[in-house]
Structure formats: C-alpha cells, structure tokens
Image 1: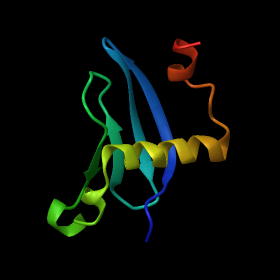
Image 2: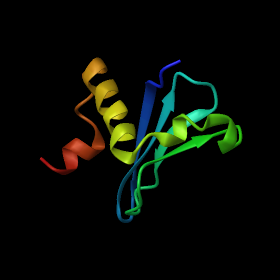
Image 3: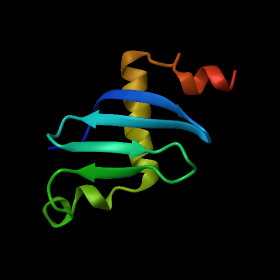
Length: 84
C-alpha cells in the first residue's frame, strides 16, 4: 500500500511552524516539531517492520504533504499566512 497524507495539523512554536500529518496507514504519521529539525516518520510498530517506509527521504515526506495540500486546496495555512 502506498503512503498518502489524509490530514494535517499545523502549530506555531517559538522557532517556527510544526506539523503532524496523519496518513492512510494505521499508526503512521509524518512529523516536524517546528524547532528547526527535519521532517520525519513515526510509526506505532517497530522500525524493522516498516523498513520500506523509513527509506523515504525528508523531501519525499514533504512532497506527500504538498500533494495532500494541493488535493484539498489547503494553501491558506498558518505557514503560508506567515510568509505573505
């Protein structure tokens, strides 16, 4: 099954914007804490059981989020309003 973003929640931090993106796979989400770190994958099951998912790069994870935003026309987010 291919990984897709099903919803996203943005939140403001002291250093920027963070987000939590839920996916179509149970217990799998894409996260960024908004403190200058990378975008990463988090799963409820051990990493060894999700080897293929963990091969996705940070850019690929962010592309999944962009694809979701385009599909729901969600460009009026906190992040986009901050940089207008």
